[in-house]
Length: 100
Image (cartoon, rainbow, N blue to C red):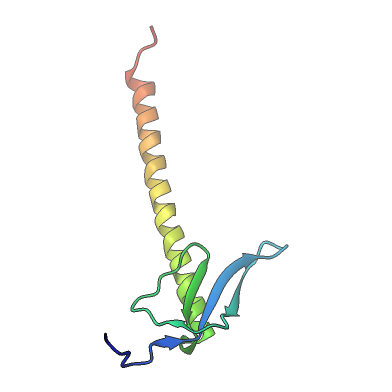
């Protein structure tokens, strides 16, 4: 049986985005009191991001926000593309089809 050579656990923090009564977003960082295994990669899931404490709250929060911004920009571009295709289809039907 193998022996653990390196200590591969660290405290982690969860960053989460919330919306206040005024409609403004803010990030809350909550420290996990149990040490968790250090992973090779960390990815945000939804409005939440779990990351090692040694990264710092600023880096963790910015990673989460950058992910959400990029995700919304992609969604917006896909929506614009779909809207243009739908308008083109509608125009084609209005000009080329005949009612019978």
